[in-house]
Amino acid sequence: MGMRYLTAGESHGPQLTTILEGLPAGMPIEASDINNELARRQKGYGRGRRMQIEKDTAEIVSGVRHGQTLGSPIALVVKNNDWKHWTKIMGIEALEEGQEDEVKRKVTRARPGHADLNGAIKYGHRDMRNVLERSSARETTVRVAAGAVAKKLLSLVGVEIVAHVVEIGGVKANVDPNLSIETLKEVTELSPVRVADPTVEQAMMSAIDEAKKNGDSIGGVVEVIATGMPAGIGSYVHYDRKIDAKLAAAIMSINAFKGVEIGIGFEAARLPGSQVHDEIAWDEETGYYRKTNRLGGVEGGMTTGMPLVVRGVMKPIPTLYKPLMSVDIETKEPFAASVERSDSCAVPAAAVVAEQVVAWELANALIEQFNSDRFDTLVDEINRHREYARGF
Image (tube, rainbow, N blue to C red; front, top):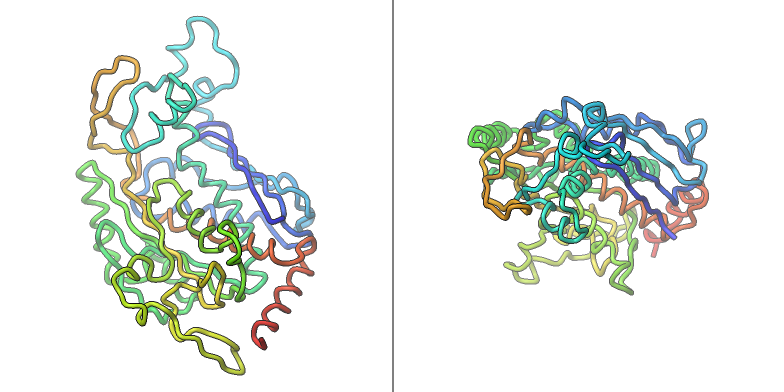
């Protein structure tokens, strides 16, 4: 059995919680490993006022003792600072007669592009606050916390991962394919839009400014690269064991993501096979490798040992200052949707979320494939597998 996690909490509730199961015992982990990733998620040009209200930090409340995992479930808690303004609106206690209109801030106007209407129909909610509080991208906070633990595991077994922005609002980056992953990390951390091409950084920020001025929002494309994954992780034997299927599902599970590709992805539809597949070579030092990496480090549902390259498309955030038309579910009357605060672009932050969900899937694939009750055993088995693959 591999790893799994559950998250709980509402956008304006008291806290967000995640419980992680399946981590090996004896793995070093500190709160700072998680909090560094949470801080990265809150950065990025185009973010709204919520990022000033919340300064996210995670508290490890179980599963870790003296800086090492115990093998038991790990529980992480992120408190919502804004809760003090929502204690009556989001309280768990039943309302007294006559309090409903005063307290609930009932939502009956469905916002286009959100989960509001579909969720209300599914669960029978006449107050769509019951939908939007959980469907909010605020939940990605604890998904990043979970991914940070996975990312720590990967770093300790020689797998490095980074996400960067390759497009915002039609402005495309031209990133040097020969950049090392270390350089890519350094450059993107310094960029307000997490782009590794400084020639387009200002154009991306200008596009965000223009969208904000027009009461609109813009989306983009993010790319996640992971190096150091051993060959042969995943499986070809069944659909739900393919590593690319798991990575695609992870990316598509992020709020507002509407597309995913691996390697050259959709470009493969426009090229002959000779310009798509990667020729195999071998040398004594490396073992097997691919002369190119157009398939993004995956063949037949398994890793090839080449860098994994996964890309995701984020739609523009649907919470707009420029109103779209919708319908009030109580009166059935049309209305122009409007909001008080929102991000005009969350693509740079979404890159960090994408990095963490990919990290979780890669770590989970290693946990599933190797003996993982003890961290030292896991490290030994992964290293042995690398040597085996090199000499195969």
